[in-house]
Image 1 (cartoon, helix red, strand yellow):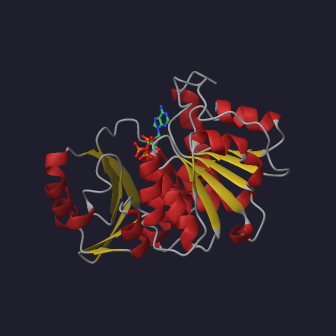
Image 2: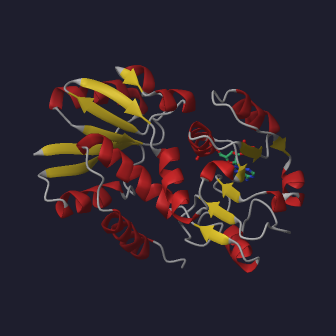
Length: 281
Ligand code: ATR
């Protein structure tokens, strides 16, 4: 049997085991995926354990995505640029770190966006870890214009400045962003504002939107945030964070096994768990 897992702290509510195990089962693979609660001070031992136990692959979640990097043998260039690893592949004892968070978002976006993605002008709300993964992944794929708005300007400016990919990018205050939402084909919300239980909160007020634009929120609890509700009322195409979550897992699965897993099985498994866990819908 091949063993996979996710390390984080806390980890009890991770939906990754059910999602990956459903895919392994569907593919008829003799594999299992489990969660490991790993405290910060034991991260290094846990990474040694991956090698010692022959665990084939691991997802990394909060709070270890950055600290795990110096403990690995090799880091993929995109993960290096993002400064965070969410996927480790054990290649015959060599641990390689990747980041599939941003690329997972891009895969989901491709399902609803107009192609080619590169020609869309985009706005990212937020400048934290999730924003950086999405921003750099979109930039690495050649999206030419991505502006950023954030409560703290310096954080956004640093993120823009440090981006190793060539693109047009500017910082906007939240107020300026509110007044120019109609400039964008795709608006991506990456902060936790509006997440359960604060479901009435929204990062900004939507005034005008460009016709046919997409508003995407990486939150999936609730499935329709206050921001997405507003966007729907204004006629936008909207997307919640479920696709990003499932695709980041699917891309990890593909890195480990060479097989792209059955996406809808994974998504339905997560939807079922959300239905059971969250009573706010
Ligand atoms: P993650 O890794 O999940 O992206 P993070 O790195 O803590 O989390 O980033 C949080 C993002 O949400 C940041 O853009 C943060 O804005 P600041 O850079 O100004 O801190 C934003 N954020 C979180 N709570 C917020 C709030 N109440 N109002 C506005 N922005 C908020």
